[in-house]
Image 1 (spheres, rainbow over the protein chains, first blue to last red):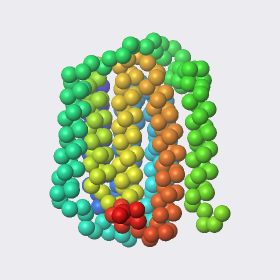
Image 2: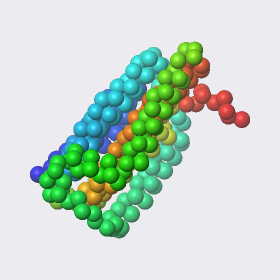
Image 3: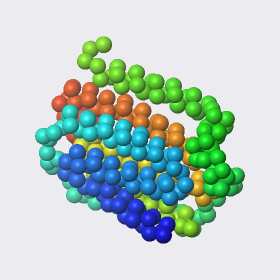
Image 4: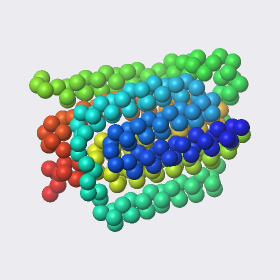
Length: 168
Length: 100
């Protein structure tokens, strides 16, 4: 049952990823990216990370892809994709990616997912709920990265506004 | 129980498709979309590892990777808007002022 869900979501995710790379128009690529993010959210739910699944839909699918669509609509509605790269460049790129995939496959199948198992089994997380478990860890062990992330977001906001203004 | 290698292989495939997209496409916005897809594939690896090792560290890393990716998308797209205003094009081949 879980395997059926996994296979369906995985196949849709890979097809959507291929669609991002292969579509002629940038707007179609953005919509395939949206599909990819939503199927990944489904996979996160299979992996008992419900908070991250919802955060993925809100942040990635709901903000990042919308931003991409805004910029695609503003900047290049009429530009045809025209001349692609030369065929030898495309073949070389595919060869490099396949090489990397073979490497990753070798590591995954002959290696062991090592590391000491922690204490947060799904049952223990289910006692307090996913959000509370993440909150407890976030505000105790990961407090410094949390504060730095808030500063990073502030810098990002100010930077984006300063960069895109017509005149300061 | 789905073996962990299934998730890791799926993540590697998505990452490889992102790499192909970055190397093959010429529209700079689509290149950026493929970079976001690569980041998202790494998120899948982290969450899978966190699930199979009964830990929340991977989930925390994904939290911060999402934050950084969102901030990077905002600033990166602001740079694209500025680039388009200056060069009137977003094809990666034509933005070549630094080429010698």
